[in-house]
Structure formats: structure tokens, C-alpha cells
Length: 100
Image (cartoon, rainbow, N blue to C red):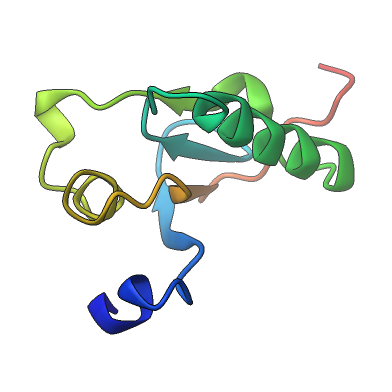
């Protein structure tokens, strides 16, 4: 991965997990500071929300808390400066549609 990063060939890191509490599909992303970084993360979230009825942007979270400092997405963000590092959470219990 490091070689791909150095050559500019690694553009996105996506860690996929099952979630046991919240319904639907949603993302965790780092709170990126800098021109366009947070906008880019929000844009990705918005795109997923528009194309998928099971994605819920309201459940998404953007943070870099100490509690999660050892998770893969934050490792890629902090150690490799890869802004587009996400954890995609998929509910074990189904989804809530746009109606409620």
C-alpha cells in the first residue's frame, strides 16, 4: 500500500464493518482539516445518500477521536495522509427508509 500511496495510485481506503445497533448503511470518516478536505468527505457521503435507499447520511460521523486512534481509517489518514479513508458500517438489522 505504501508504494501505491507514494506513486499516487491509492486514492481511497474503505474498511467495511457490520454494525449491531444503528440501522442502515453509513460512514465514519476523519475530520480532515484543510482546503476542500471536509467538503470532499461530505460530497462522498451526499453521493452515497442520493444513489442508495439504504444509506443514511444522518448516521455518518466525522471525527478523529483518541478513542478510535487505532482504527484502520484513522491510521491511513494520520500516517499516510490519505484524506479519503472511510469505515463503511452496514447494519445487521436492516435499514430505515426515507419515510421514517
